[in-house]
Amino acid sequence: MKHYIDFHEDVSVSELDELLDTAIKLKAKTKAGVFEPLLSGKSLGMIFTKSSTRTRVSFEVGMYQLGGQPLFLSSDDIQLGRGETIADTAKVLSRMLDGIMIRTHDHRDIVDLRNYGSIPVINGLSDDQHPTQALADLLTIREHKGALRGLKLAYVGDGNNVANSLLQACAKAGMHISVASPQGYTCPEFFVRQAHTDAAVTGSIVQMTADPFEAVKDADVVYTDTWTSMGQEEEKKHRAEIFAPYQVNADLMSHAAKDAIFMHCLPAYRGYEVTADVIDSPCSVVFDEAENRLHAHKAILVHCLLR
Ligand code: CP
Ligand code: NVA
Image (cartoon, rainbow, N blue to C red; front, side):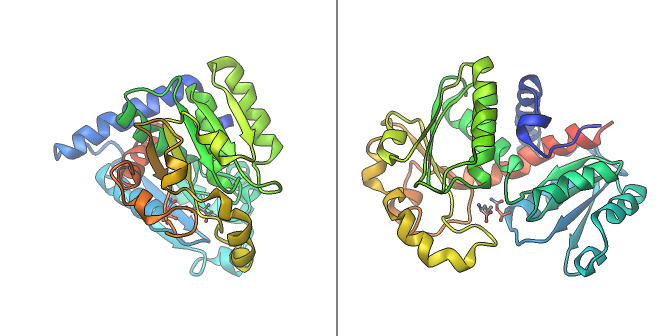
């Protein structure tokens, strides 16, 4: 059974190539108006205990386009939100569905869903990781730059779920990655170690720094995310002060490669992690990146559910 929970554990180097190839093929078909019902008769439960625009819409539309049935399961409405255990939820849903996509806080809950259930589980974001975003990001970079291996991505800002999955994904893809975060807000050592392990195989260089200018030097891709992730709202003011020197603005972008692209998983907060003149400029590919959630997720759905 194929799960898609953790980029390091669940996606091999060859599977990554397959997923990207599948996403590109499915995207071309979608653009041509061809929708093959590959997942006809299959149902995907989509559990959300946090807000979502892109992840929800892309998985829901993706299932429809593949001929399957998506079910939006807000934790406000299902018994999980009233204290039913993850174990019981996993066992019940496994009797009725063909797969579960879940967005929640505690990564452990996603692992438990996998352990207690008997159907594929897809991680739609936890406090620690955002692996479906990372696949759409690689797809976007491949489209804009033609290849992945040997390119440099600079991630500037909070060492959060998006950054952790990018570390894992870049190392798998043979891309160099430099992460610049303030002290105390860098990616957990666990993810850095994993990235180094994969980098030793793929030849990518992994750099952790506190200096945003060092990170973006010669970067082909400059990436940032919100300074205040879901669940951290009370820290917003404090974080805005700590992260101010890490804002991606025109000055910082001028230190990247001449043809560097700007990426952001969205939602974005202009004037905080990125200035409007960068995110709304021609170098920004954020809406291609958002669209690619649909195509990448369809590849993940086929990978996990078609068997
Ligand atoms: N990037 C992303 O995951 O967006 P949503 O929170 O809207 O799903
Ligand atoms: N780091 C952000 C990503 C949102 C898609 C968060 O967790 O809120």
